[in-house]
Image (cartoon, rainbow, N blue to C red):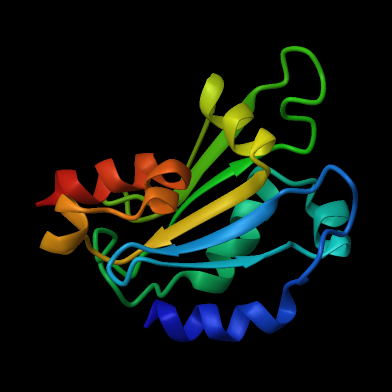
Length: 159
């Protein structure tokens, strides 16, 4: 279960910023409407350079390949690059999960306001899991909506 994997991962993450421009990593449970916060350790960011690399680190630690790709315990991860919103025209972000079509890693890179918005709030990565319950569809928590709005639409479209 992904909640067990999150509990195993959290002690390996940092509880405070490792460098001035680092954003939080949010682990969002849509079903329970819970948000866990941590920071990716500096050594991992330096080795993997943020963005896609950090998304792959999170996917590696959270993915259960025995499940089907559309199972609610498969994480959907949004991440920003190291330079996102720090350098003009650096507005790239990655969406990472497990593709239901090919059953291999899904990773998409795109640029627009969403990655810059995440980084300026300050978030570097958001991983969501769980299925929306009827309660969360009618009265979602404000923080969940602002930090994981794209994850809500993905999970809602499945039903």
